[in-house]
Image: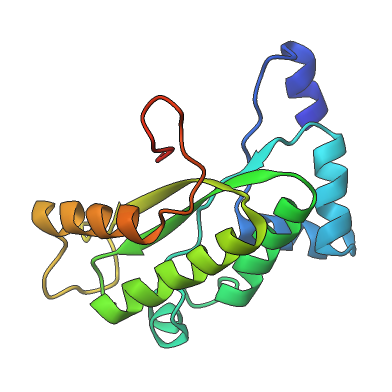
Length: 171
């Protein structure tokens, strides 16, 4: 699929797959994550999406993302990709059942991996959308909460690769 897309136009930038999808592809192929990523890169994959991070705190994750990869697995897929020279974005789903401390913990793990690999090129803070979802939320995220989360994230994740024009590479 990646080779076919690249054949359409070599200028096409392929940003595909979440960490959970990489883990699933590796499991289906009975290959390591590293080998799976190497093969995808050879086929034209240029960057990974940051989807599936949700909130890294184990207790929260088990409530909102049961069955998804662990925080360690998510971070390891991105670490491996970055070690191979690939770039990716990272995300945080906020405004559901997590605490402010859980958000800071999440940002701390992203910052630590960025310090190690320098592979993240953008961060996407995603406010939880309670409509048509099974997770009951007492107070869904407000516009002010989203702005505050973005502001704190920009300060905390000051080690993300920045754009020479704007100073930020936020997705």
